[in-house]
Image (cartoon, rainbow, N blue to C red; front, top):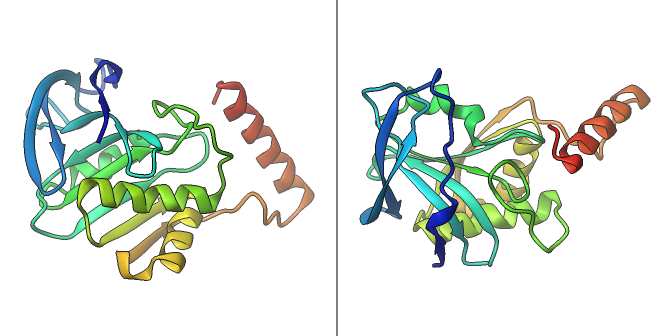
Length: 197
């Protein structure tokens, strides 16, 4: 597994959380490679375990946050188009008794744009590569918007890896219900492509 520790960003503004030290964790065990000062989206008394960009077993590089304990249900959060793992901050803060993994999908937020063309199918394969890289045999997948479609695709293609699905407003831009919705998606995609979302 290749790590680029120089890629750990100053994730959150000071108004949201206070500074904290976080361990880099891998899979069910902890391997303290180094400790990074960052900002937590919880509060000054809680810690979030932040990983630098992580090269998955399939070669994709993503920014990952991993919190909680691995001895209970493990939950993976998938954000929507133009969003980031930060979308789930408040939810993850309330699930301290569970291992919660959130990540910026390839090309979103702090994850670099990959060389391969992105689709629901390729990102669902990245979800499985994330589980493999982190040593997670099965997980509950939570997806918002297009993240819900990605979670559904992952469950359809790899049912043995998905314990349960939680879908929050799943929307697929290629299944446009109307010309108006198509225009909204087209505008949103352009913002993401231009890096202004």
